[in-house]
Image 1: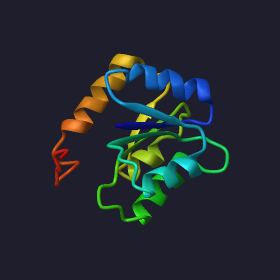
Image 2: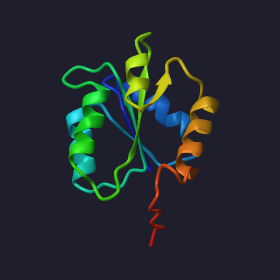
Image 3: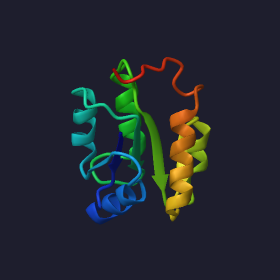
Amino acid sequence: RILVVDDLPEVARAIARMLSNHDAATETDPRRAIARIIDGEPFDIVLVDLDMPYMTGRQLSDALIEAKLERPPIVLIMSGSENVASLFATGRAVLIKPFDGSELRELVSVMLHDDTVHEHHHPDA
């Protein structure tokens, strides 16, 4: 399952549509997204916009790290700004906007099947 977090609902929906081959949910408030994840809603990947009111994608990513979840989702930050070098420097996955559906699907499938990302794979019971 994938959670798409973007403060623009139409953008979140467009990205979720690109991922129609996955179970994709959308959330426009990053704080609510964090609450859903910490409350135990299972997501494999969280696609989050970098520039949002209230909270940046990076802050959302940090909050999930601090939560020390048993199965933290992979956070993929989307940014349309030029200043992504600082994000790359933190070792975070960054997707540069605009991107197309095939790029996104390819990246997601790589992330879902990359065993170095999830050392402990729990098959769904």
